[in-house]
Image 1 (cartoon, rainbow, N blue to C red):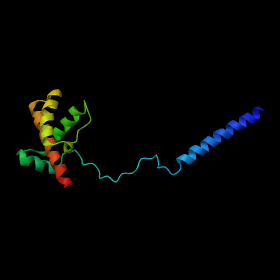
Image 2: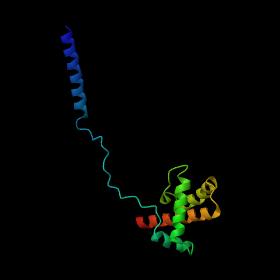
Image 3: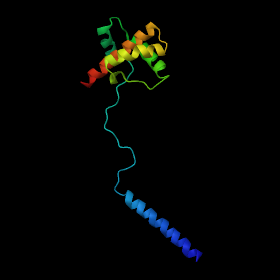
Length: 130
């Protein structure tokens, strides 16, 4: 009698597993789909950013933009994920940066470096998308 009950349980489990497998058959793979997405632009300053920055602020150097980038990464990542310069309008940055600069205790030189880095990088990334 015990042997019969055990075999009925085994049969029930096998039946249930078969049903589950049949239901799953033909569904999409659980593996993430490969996206055909262009790689994200680098946020590290380069010569194109220097050219963009110099159009607005004469004398800006790659070293200045790199300092702004480093401050941006160091200070901003303390509280939140890095915000991509191209994801926000100039007006958004003009509203946000003064508040965030005060919160992260940037002095006026640090603020200027971050501001110029963000707007130059934003400009070059958006120009490259055209």
